[in-house]
Image (cartoon, rainbow, N blue to C red; front, side, top):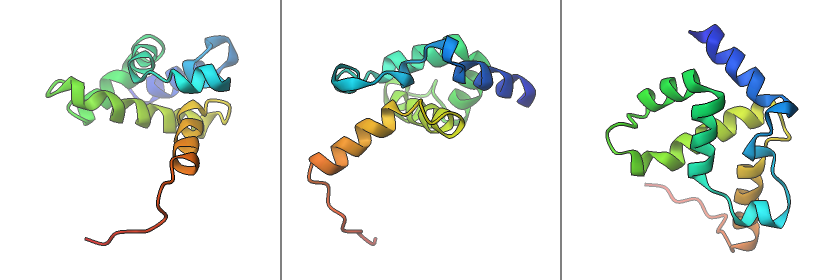
Length: 107
């Protein structure tokens, strides 16, 4: 199973795969759709989708798990190919331009 996961991720990271995570520019960043990312995972990496969705119990409440699943996939793909950084770029803009606090809260 791990070989299949690796194979899917390698193929998804290739430029020919035209991942939504490669999209650049204002339009791409302002129209980030986690549902679109989930569709990509299901299409390009069905084994990865199955594995991750079971890990985060996607069937329990899919509406609450779409974003975490997309973020996990985004991190994995960014780690494999720095060009696939759409989610990270959006987060950076939100943190820098959205007046995010650098304060750390201890609970």
